[in-house]
Length: 283
Image (cartoon, rainbow, N blue to C red; front, side):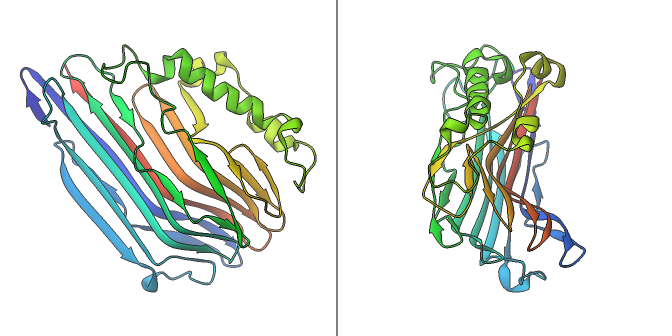
């Protein structure tokens, strides 16, 4: 908690590089790797883990993971409090189907000296060398999805209330539900029911829940054995791959760079390069 004038900022940032649950071929909790939480008073911390020590290497392996959280008063004139959270997975391999040289989630917020709503940036976030069953996949990221107009000025309200942000999120849902957007090589020629049931956009429900699930990923290019639905890749005999999932509510941003819903070769759920960031200023 660092006071500036008569105001105090309470920092908040959490991260982990890897975690989840398996039910088959083994029933096991995937131990959290390089988990960190930032002190409400700010500061700096790092954590890392080497893949050689990971107990489930036959199912999921990595070379190295590392995370970082930091919070401090900005040195820039007329700026307030800056928070940064980073999660990196290097040399990823999930059952020889999903591989990546590097997966990075990085989120930074800049809270104002007066007011409450921060600027947010995802600069540094990336997928490097992502492959599905050996096929190279290029990921189109929209790192400006939460921008609210003038980058030099602080937002006048929370991102979840911004019309441009809501329009971008709604457009993602619409594209995912359009069979005309499927590539000609796709394994699935129609939009499956689970997409239609899960990705339903309703402005009233956004107001009721107080949060929006969207993605930093506009789409992908590169042919693989399966079907892309926006940021979701469905792979037969493996499961579903969710890229760049972003959950935005009134005060926080949660970015999960890769989430796997496994079903066939293995069953379970795995999340990689996970971050959450917010912070509160009083009064």
